[in-house]
Image (cartoon, rainbow, N blue to C red; front, side, top):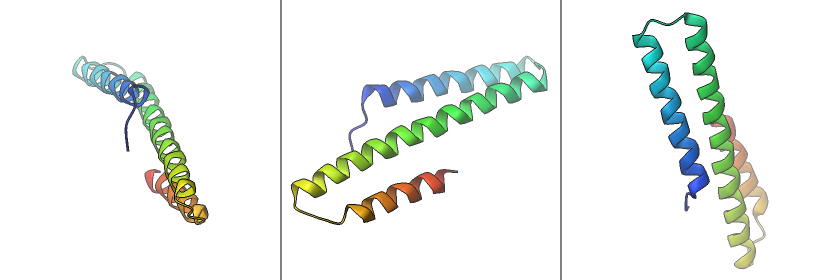
Length: 87
């Protein structure tokens, strides 16, 4: 699968969030603020997983249709399993 710039930029933003959280911890910021930022990072990761899984599903379905395969239901089940496993 090819990961586009949008996906890579999402991960770079998450990386920046995590560095910021670590800095907050080193500066002994308030627990509530750290947890808020950790929660935001987790949400960003969840959204990124969704983008990657959905993009992969689209690619797989297109490929299956181009090759005359009719088993797209199995592809959808696999995508859903990936999303469930990520939680």
